[in-house]
Length: 203
Image (cartoon, rainbow, N blue to C red):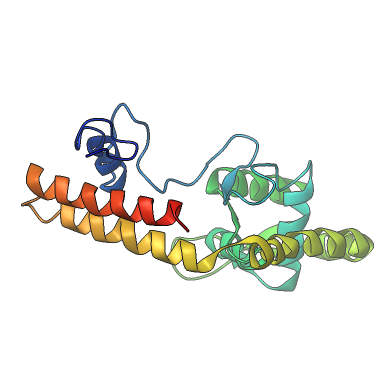
């Protein structure tokens, strides 16, 4: 029986299983790793237009400053606020957020706030509040563009397919981690997936 993408029976299942179980090997990183660093500096879902930069020069700085002008926040809260603003389609990495916060602090437009715990909280200073007010139109356009990522996801995304694919990978991953995922079981899983592929092709 021909196995889609697997070559001879079950041979290609091992790379797939390595991805599903999060094992790293010659096939690259674990399945579901977000894109980090590079031009993005965060996790970005692949959309209709493919990968691309979310922030231009100075734009992340301005968004963080605007968020901190609304209320004090620590780094993780800022990351989540941007993720929510984009409908979950983009979250800046700590590796770009915290250096930007240090820059804003050095510029005197934000300041650390006393608080409980070890996490630093920041708030906009009077100078920071004034900059946000002076650049209100620019801030509004930038935030509207970020909200557009959520709109694109609603228009072009496929939530039912993502849910179904997520269920598939979870089921296979859990089965593989059960401790008795022998070669025969692996072949049975491959047969099920091959049959699903054939049905989709006939649609």
